[in-house]
Image 1: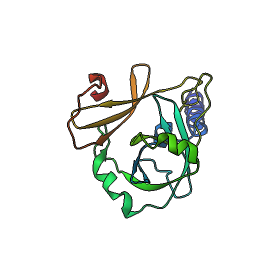
Image 2 (image 1 turned 180 degrees about the vertical axis):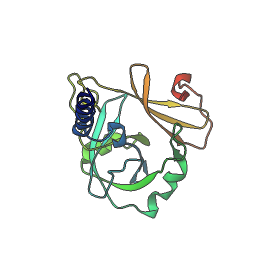
Image 3 (image 1 turned 135 degrees about the horizontal axis):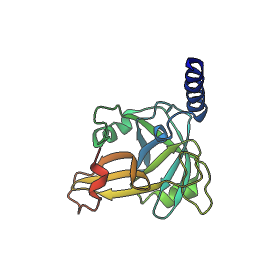
Image 4 (image 1 turned 45 degrees about the horizontal axis):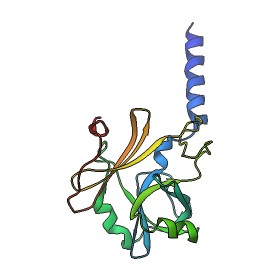
Length: 181
């Protein structure tokens, strides 16, 4: 009996390792200011040279990019960005090197948008599937009193939430449930 319990535990651990890192560790928020693109993320795997997908969920716009070295040029983003569900979690900031001029031109008016490390799993009909279960997650950008909330949901569950401070009053339109822990 003890052997079967150990075997089941070992199989569960092996399955978790095979699944790879938490897909939510691949997310961040990108911003464009004066032609400079920057990324704020908590992803441990973020490093210069890493592939990045910039994503605006409402129009479905995408552009490929790469991470550049962290630089002082993007330091201001760090002061405007935090994790509401994990306020003490670290924020790492990088410059972004666009790789897709046409896609970047389409996204330049967005100001702030989602950024995903690596290439997400393709989904029939569009969208982005972070956990490779064949179903797209819902990406939402909504407003609170002075900022933008970047939210990734699966059904009614909030999987990831980041806050971007705008510094001006806006009309809140986020559902209350995104703030629940």
